[in-house]
Image (cartoon, helix red, strand yellow):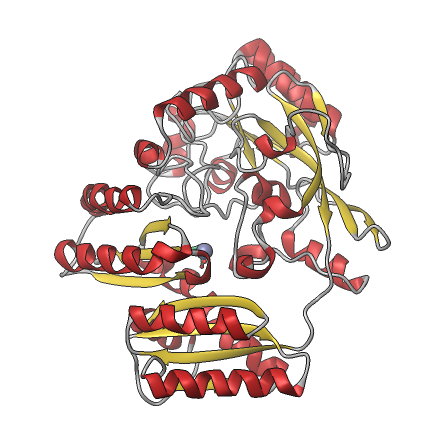
Length: 475
Ligand code: S2G
Ligand code: ZN
């Protein structure tokens, strides 16, 4: 559908609500033009058409509370919206909802060097947070390819992971305080940045990963840490998935690991061709590991070199390159970090699955066998955070196949993939959230009793069901 048609088809807001929003936000912060509806009404998902009824750009918590009370009064649905870099449709407004964008609430409010914490508004850009921490010699350690445009509120609402989880954990590990506006319009201050606070249920952790179904995150207090000493990157050419796991075990035992990522040869080909980057080796290998470790001393570098030599002797590694400078470290990271953006042109159907690290070899081999059976005629790109047991399996859409037909075919294969995940006690969505795209498969990872409890918690925080209806589970 074209944006123009969407605007005409969208359920019209009650006149009284439109009037109230205009007087609250003015013309420039209550958008209804087709271009804005299309732009703010979607995330990076390409399988759903955006169709919001309007876009709201509040600049204060009290404006957000007024918007929530209007939404309750007129029974209009709200989709909280950050950087819209999500991949499961969690920020899609596809049914006439109002987009509640935090774009105008992006201030860094305080950096407490002694307390090693940073407080910011919910719309603060993740990359800005990284820079603010670095200015004080500290680091906010959750990082990923989209951090240049993602917002902290969205990162928290999806419990974003990224490339350093093996060392620093997920976003959840770094949120020490949240201010949220719930579906009743109440402002809750959760945990107030305290390191220690054992006074009943920690409601902060309900909002982390809630994907906007409980309310909207308007402010966050984050923990900061010391940056790693002299991080170095190795890229290793690896002959098989089984070898990858042997290399991981060796790296975990002998290096101060910061990241352990992998990607397939097709991923490498797409990135080197698409981005005009030099391949790391003259030969090609089925898989590559990207290993980042702290090299705080000469011994650490020697240990890494000896580890690689040992892996080569075992046949687990066929070739290796070790970064000799900061610029080379960054360019080696591009081989991994540019994958997502590069393959986006093929409208990839994404599986973001995980299991325990111990069961990862079984997940890899069983899903790879499924892929060979069901996708023999398609391009399949493997990559991900194998050190966390998290694999990204992207099926690339051929130009000759429509999006709808492609999605239907991949969805049918997903049932087989998710059954393997379920048998291995894994997750059907390791880091990208459930949103719209994964909710039909939620039962593979969560049992009915849990889903019933989740619905009950949602009803407590959002009794009128105005926040993000139809996401995570069917409304
Ligand atoms: C990654 C980013 C999004 C994608 O690269 O680790 O989580 O394309 C992904 O899967
Ligand atoms: Zn990832």
